[in-house]
Image (cartoon, rainbow, N blue to C red; front, side):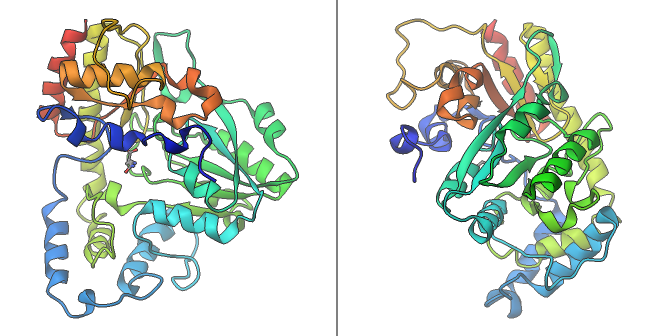
Length: 382
Ligand code: GLN
């Protein structure tokens, strides 16, 4: 069930891992922060470590305090009362949450529609559970120099044509990794209408829901009429609280975080900080005259690498040879200029590598000083 062809290839996270790159390379590759979770979250985690209850088996659906905190936090946004026994499940990371959705609902041969580019881990999670991926591309606007993430659009006729009698589910990802697209209410309504018409489920990956810019509003597809019963929404405390490694059990830190998030005005501050971080890379690419997609959500920015070239005899390792042009470009930029990024063809199926290989994904979940340093190094790309 592994992907044909790519089955034996190394995954992109291993190839572009800091361990394989020059030691002083600035990591704008895999999306994790170079700063710690806020102190009040750390304190809650430390406190929990010392308690008897948090040191032993948890409730299988997640600690009651955490589920209660999730209920209180999400209810106003979702506009309904949540049942902590039946409608909230805590998992060890969003990947496990998504995997659980596929385990629960997919039967052998069920088709799952995903928009390309797609977060690469959907693919093994779907295929290991007998699902068959069906790809519907987001179409970028390649003509304009100033592309924003919402210029990557769904062709709804194409989406309709992709639906067959075997289609079970559509994966929605908003804000989107790697494009940064924040799906509009109208787009989500059109997806919802198709889900109703063809009796489909939605797995809505909303792990970047707190990270939107330029006053873009994050719309939850589960809140649209008729969609509550068809949708499983997956969120991530790791993205919310700068703690991508706090996967297992979460002690009580996530609960403490959710309990205090509004009162501390934490997300407003975080959004401003991320806007500033995004701006450093935008200014950098603008000054280089390179094309990129301005992201309206998430913490990634896609750089069009078409204009970047390297010496023919550049010593590339076997792991990137024979992959898309973007693998070579990302390797070259990392080893020659000291800034790592992620090749975007990994987020496309084999047949569509030629679309994805035009882009490198840079993560801006780093402190401004580090991003400025990266921008400074990238000036040499000119
Ligand atoms: N979601 C993160 C990213 O896209 C982490 C990916 C991962 O852990 N494999 O960078």
